[in-house]
Image (cartoon, rainbow, N blue to C red; front, side, top):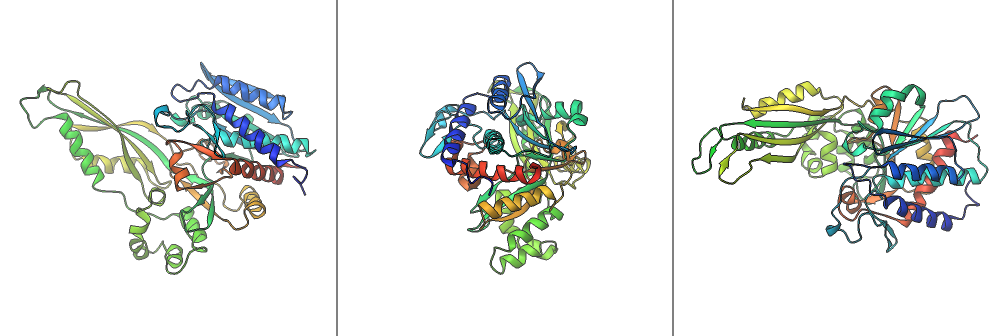
Length: 447
């Protein structure tokens, strides 16, 4: 059986040390500055004997993008495996261990990026190395990709790459971030999601204008008041819940592990009456609520420059995530109607088209099913519609089968650490991640 000769204690120690080093590259985006980490990844690919065919692109000054090719023996389209190098900001004062220390403590590797998504890159590295050391050869080529700038939309990362080099990539499947094992979200069973679709990104700016003046003399044409009232009207009218083909398949898969009447409700959510009955339960969970409706999050406010001056301008930025079948123009029209104030205009900061849906049950999906049967036989699996955005969308938008999967198990606290405080990954998850990644790579690519 493949992997029986592997010294897993040594692999775990290697994974922990290598991830720790990777985390120590501060790739906070902005500004990103991923080039030193990209060069380190190139050296890892070469020194571990994975491939010498490695190119580093620099989409912008200091932004490093790694593209390594592992040859296959047959003229097949490659499997593209991708993770992003950049991470979001972290305030060291809030963390148990400094966010870029890569501390090894209490059975965890701590630091920004340990879950999102430097660990995925380490899984790819060590799984490839161990397969090659074991004498496995590949019939299907593999492209190892590590990109910058995912956290701010990919204009200097994946978007830059696919706009210039998609024909040279031309993958059979794309393996990216987007999901994993969830513990305690749907009962006691561990449920693994495989991301096959994601919501549309609409980052919008609301700009209110009014009459400036002295703070001692209030008036009715205050830009700040106009903006606050517009935001209140938007928040008072959440978009309706909707079940599509992906979420219906997901709920039916989850229903198998639930008790009646929850199992029955989950299987029948396309019935409007059943959806209304389940509404409170569904909307009380942040993840489920985000999967089932267009969402709006107020994230940035700007107004004023002195306490005794009424400003002439006020701005708010809102992060809107639309279901794949939502018409973005219709949504923006609805938003303007809710605002109902011609002093407040809507500007588009970033807009992404629908991502498309990767095949459910295809070879990649089945490879994950087989890996779970071996390493997590008690777990269930379901297709997932990602509430956020990933680089996989750039491939799905043009018809490629892109999947999101990270072979780790997370509970609610772990999910809160992603983009939060004290992000970390356990040594057990590192071992599991390498084992499952090996199996999936072997199933799809080994001779």
